[in-house]
Image (cartoon, rainbow, N blue to C red; front, side, top):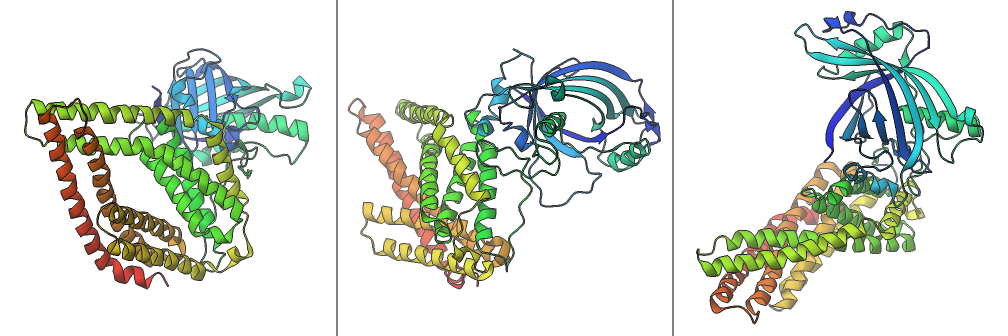
Length: 547
């Protein structure tokens, strides 16, 4: 397993002759430790197209110093708030033991496969750093921070860069101020002190970015795009793209185009998919649910806004998102069903029959869950999945908008919500008229799906409809949740009926399954009653809409 922490640091460019200033003058710093010198060697891994660097991600194997090993640095979540120039950089950092020089540990690889998308990580840059570390301590001995004075030699490897090997080697000096146990309040004062010594905020986010920037500049001349360099905006299209990390999108405006609402909402769901992909690969709790929810949200929004975009493109994305949702749904549904019936089996009267029934449930549903997870893990490595991610990002970055997408957001969005609300009302009327049995259960399941779509559409218009949109989200979510319990009871009843009918079952165990099946009938009736009550309560909110 990889260990993880949050790196909080700020980099500075500095000339070769600059003197490290007296850091003991900083507020809260009582003394500065004796300088420690280390020789560090690091090899950075990336694809040939620098897919990781394009997203502000660095993957390296470093020897020398106190933290030798594999390091993976991931950028923080995108913030819409502007930060002052003195603000430090925050990054998630994962560590793994040194292992083999050319074999990325699985515990780190799982976090970047969603960005590599089938490409192999290979050595991209080799760095040799002479680091002099100045430790800063408080008067009680607490280790506040470290100032690293780095003299770096970088060699760009692989097929990138110019033919002249000398042009692909750079040297520079930089300072890094990194917190250990101190407060971020240290950075503004430190920035002033370091500036007085000739330092200035670095023009690169990482040593890898600077090395690649130098290589690209030498190869293509001034003005060339640089993966991961400060201030560079990447397209994000195709296997990670070759531009820098995407800037935070502008929030939709009431008088702006309605198409901005979908793009902003879709951007959030793509971010959720990318964030939860590693957790699914590592089988972390709730990540399948979260990834599936983001997939459903994206599909619902594309359906609601489909007339504003190229029909063929939207149809293809919706079909592929449906496929992905199905692959995620199999293990998630099995997991939910196992938890549900495991708890209810524990309420049976104690005895051999109850234990045998519980064991049979564990065997049956556990096997289904394991099989579904194996298929899901295989799918996450498939070209089809990676192509879907590429297509979603391409749609977000270069949306095929029709003229209707230029309509004013507030009014057009209200119509989209109203349309989804009417769809839900029609489904509810159909369910009320449906004949008891399978027809009625299917109709209520459709109500649930339409409530979910309304919820997602209302979420997407939140930036321009605020409080009213949130009320609709709450009402639709309430109906969806209740009918989710209803549907779980229907599915559980079918599972239990099949188990009870197994030919190799003795009568006592079969009776235990029948008891559990009867319980599902009761729970379904209670859920349906709760739904009709919730629908009546929310009718005014849904009929009023957002405008």
